[in-house]
Amino acid sequence: MAATLTQERFTGPEWIFERKFDGIRLLAYKNGETVELYSRNQLPQLIPSVIEAVKNLPVQDAIFDGEVTWPRGDVAYHVFDVMWLDGRSVTSLTLEQRRALLAQLPLAPPLYRVDLVDDESPWELAQREGWEGVIAKRRDSTYEHRRSKQWLKMKCELSDEFVVGGFTDPQGKRVGLGALLVGQFKDGEFVFAGKIGTGFDNAMLLELRERLDKLEIEKTPFTKAVGLPRLRAHWVRPEVVVRVGFIEWTTHGKLRHPRLLSVVK
Image (cartoon, rainbow, N blue to C red; front, side, top):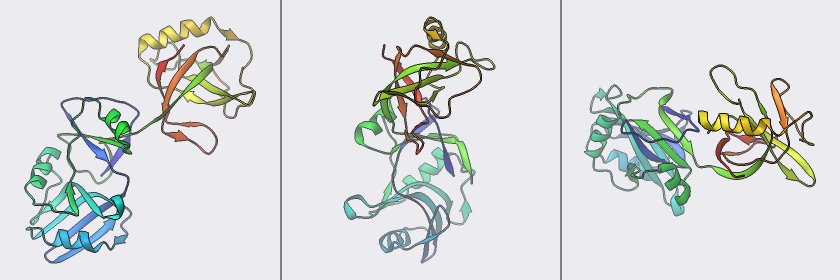
């Protein structure tokens, strides 16, 4: 089961949160004394200490899901789910029920049970601790053998300030504007960095549109730009500054998965 990337940040009683580890996804198959490990791409993995620890668990057969990392050179298998246990599939049970089954097993190093993240803003904790991110999982989710929106991954973000050089018209039921067109001043050039279409509520969309309408100009202010929209675009004097969260820069110098964090000025 694979998580779907989201730019939304939320909590709620129907969700639990876990740390997102920066390692290799690992499935462990135990059948009596035989243990086999496979990566997400079904490639066999040979990690003797993990094989021995899984073999010593007091169950006849089982299939575990988790992530293997090598902190400080030591191996650690972070187990966060179970798909099969003692002769039966448990994929149709809820996540909470499957976690309860895991809680009954005496995992010992290098096996570690993945704990819940108990924080009002799990993604901010992840940022402070230097994690890759967090995974949000619905408590009632069954185990699906595919990418699912019942599991959502929130990656830690970079952030920076950008200047608004334009915007696009809204489409469908959206109000105010569709996306901000932003850039940064570098070496005397106003360089286009991408479109920001998430992180707004309706009030902010309408407020920004009213403000930007007063700054509208006929031609683009970007002096270095690839991929500017050709339709439904408006250009403005580059005066409005926003802070944007994003995952990384693309090889083409654009923001990957950007979202508006705030209006700076």
